[in-house]
Length: 229
Image: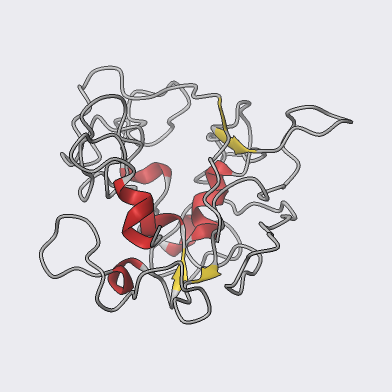
């Protein structure tokens, strides 16, 4: 399975302006802290309320009963998934918690689209491939990003480490299987959205990565955690 660079078109309208971001310090001050955003309509500028709603009454259709109390409208985008002539794992259209991530990160749903609020403009982060027809517009093409919702199969793909024995990150005793979701690689496999299990790189932004990629002691550490190259 090839490793492809994730192409991210970032249009961040409001990140935390009052707190210094520290990898692993928690969501306050991280890129998911929207408490100071002008469009945040929660009481007193809540952090959690942008994504989670504790009472089902306020949740959008389709999210009633969601165990994560998800409060955002889901993406209606049709996605083209990653493919490769050397692909050995089964891949499906985004499922599981990846669908929750894409309710912000698909390039079509506005950050402001939550808690029954349907107005607002900018999208946050679009995973796109520029086309000859409409260069750079979100078109649901995930083919140039690292695959998500893909089965991690080290038997079919000898270029992957055994997920039951390979250490993942710096947490003692944690292996790859512990960060998979039903045996699949999802967004949360590599990223911790709440910035608790994030490893600081030697330089540059952390991107909420569970294993830092910019470390002199372990260059490309995240990639080589799973890929036996």
